[in-house]
Amino acid sequence: MNPDLHNSETHPLGDILIVDDELNNLRVLSAILQSYGYGVRQAIDGRTALKAIEVEPPDLILLDIIIPDIGGYEICQQLKQNPATAEIPIIFLSALNRTNDKVKGFEVGGADYITKPFQSQEAIARIEHQLKIRSLQRQLQKKNEKLELTLSQLKNMQLQLIHAEKMSSLGQLAAGVAYEVQQPMNSIHQNINRVVKEASQILEPLASYFATDLNTNPDGLAQLDRDKIQPSIEGFSKAVTTLKSDAARIEDIMASMCYFARTDSAQMQQLDVHKGLESTITILQNRLQTREELPPILLRKNYGNIPLIEGYPGQLNQVFLTLLSNAIDKLEEKLEAGVDFAPTIAVSTQAIESPFPGVEIRIGDNGNGSSGEVEDRLFNRYFASEAPLKGNAIGLSIAHSIVVERHGGQLQYSSNVGEGTEFFLRLPRQAAF
Image (cartoon, rainbow, N blue to C red; front, side, top):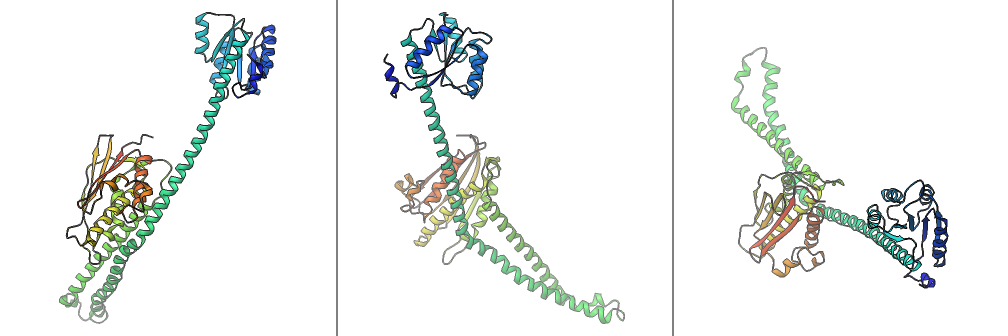
């Protein structure tokens, strides 16, 4: 074999440690390796070898089986148990040519075996082979590290995209939510005035009585004009009840908004699907109610007995919002086209065991539906400019990513032109990753 070939990529150079207590073997093998351009270090016992490896790990070790103080098999086991040295290829050297000895060498982690007295060409070929494998392993490791970094960056970009979509959704909902809050606020202002008015009509006769008639007519309290006071008492009670109801409505809207807009933790958590659906429906109430010249949208809910699941609540709320908003969009399109029908959205949940134990959520509408060509590309984020979804195609793509990639679930649908669309959202009870 030509030593000059070792300057090419086919024969990569390397740092080799030879561990052998026979000085003649050390001298001969070192000379051969150096003539091929390899860097060579030597050790005549186990402790010296381990210390040399600790100071500067070599690219390959030629290790005699029988050496003083620590045997070759034991040295190999120690190196393979240490993550810092486990990947260093070890070729055993021995005059023993028994099959059992070779098998044991492989069992403790040896990469190859050279029998003494060795043939120089065979030894070099085996060394080159192991160094080539080690070089390829390092290249693969670097590529894997680069891929992991790229994957991490892509995940971060995906999370940023999800967050941006959520903020966009919240911005679009802000006007509707403000309207939803303004209605009970107006009612509260009106009823506060009513409470003040009714209270004065109740308190004025009482104040007059206590100021003038209490001493002269102690039984006059019972003789107050009940017909005059009773309507005020009833009006006062109704106004207070309405105030409580309006305040509860505002509290419900704000709680739903906060639950929808929550920032997810890094770890999945147990969540209630129904709570997420209800909070999303609450902040969409303005779009479901009567609009100018359009009838209200009927919402039919059929919730089953479902378990808690593992997931990211904020992200799943975004999925619910996207699917419900898409249903409303499709119904509005059909209404604006002048079709006479009762716009309806159906939301149902049930526990499932297939394709995995978990929950299935169905969100359907009786809107215009979609063609087969649109269906094939509905979850493609690059289809946004073409899909007849009022700009919701990117949202559907992100929803698909959240369900499939972030939660290990499924998001499918069926659609018929003129009849409507139904989405099938399946989420595992426990995440598989």
